[in-house]
Length: 58
Image: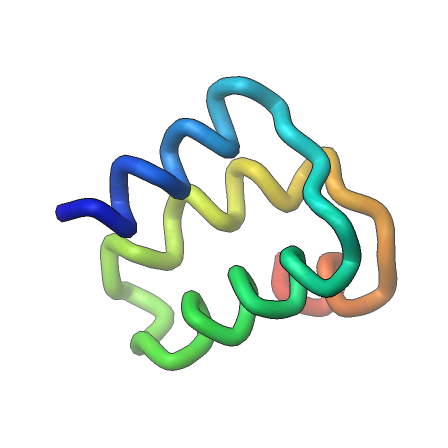
C-alpha cells in the first residue's frame, strides 16, 4: 500500500515534516482504529517530532 510505504520511509529516514504535514499525517492515522497497521509507522516517526499533538498521539 502506498500510504504504508510513505509512512515507513518518513520513519526510517527520520524526517521531521512541518507542523502542518505532521497534523495531516496524524489526522490520517487517527482515522483508523488503534490496532490498525497504518498507525504503526506514524508512531515510530512521531518519536522524533516536536509538539503537543505528537505527544498525545504517542
